[in-house]
Length: 44
Image (spheres, rainbow, N blue to C red):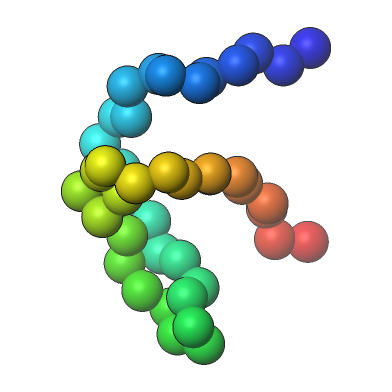
């Protein structure tokens, strides 16, 4: 069973993301005030 996290306050984080062909560092400050979807896919 999954739990909805809609309207849940985003906790501070730091992650590496792949964006426009490059790896970039991403924090919660980069997405404040924007619609965002986060998902995790572990490496195979």
